Structures are given as C-alpha cells and as structure tokens.
Length: 159
Image 1 (spheres, one colour):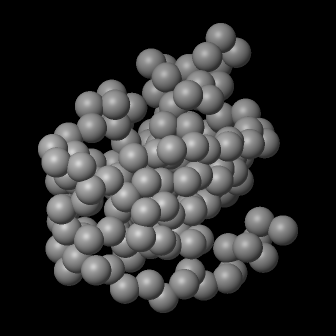
Image 2 (tube, helix red, strand yellow; image 1 turned 45 degrees about the horizontal axis):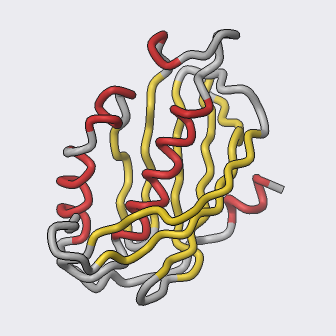
C-alpha cells in the first residue's frame, strides 16, 4: 500500500507567498531542536516538505532504536513547514493536534520525514506525515502521522 501511495503525485498547490521556501528555510534554521537532532531540509515545494535526520547515538532509546520522540519531532516539523508553505507572508504555524502511528522500530542509517498538506484552509490545515528509514539503499515506511496546523495571525508569531 505504501508503494502505491508514493506513486500518487502530490497536489499541484501554489504558495500565496512567493518567498515561501526562503522563509521556511530561515525559520527551520532557528529551531534548535532540529540542530540537536542533526536534521536538515531536503525539499520544499508548496504543500510538501522533506526533512532528513541521520542516525545518531544521542537520539536512541534503551533498545538502540531511534527514540519515537526524535522521529515525531521531524515528522511534525515536516508537516508544519508543509502547511507554512501554504500560508500568507506574516503568518506563523502552530501544531494543534497530531496522531502518530509507530509501525516499525527506528532502525536505519538515515530517516526521511515527508510532510504534505492534504487540506489547506484559512485557519486550519490538515497534513499527512510519513517517516522512512533508509538503510543499505532501501527505504521502509516506519511512521505515519496525521496533523492539524493552525495559521497564526498573532503579533510576534511569524515564521
């Protein structure tokens, strides 16, 4: 099912802010959590963001797998930045809820989180996030997230 899902092309969204990519990358660079995890943005398109995180001994749980909190952090961030790419200039993004399904242990050389906007809205955006473990040239879907992001039009909260 995951292979069929990946074959579907993402919706052809247009961003209301022509500087959405630079704004997203600048906001991402301010996240000390992403720096702690060693995460980086790979791809930014309207409604679609990919973030990569390498395996690291500092993000493991007691059995030697990458901690679910680290995986959740990169998937939530990918979903949030995908939503932000669909927001007008001057808006900020804030997660209001998410559900994370952990389908396989965090085992791999690198982890790639993909966040996509499913339903853009003026106040709320529904997103879908996936995390893939990469090892020996193979990619395996290990988590699935649904998340709702709020468009913040609050002074001082700008991405």
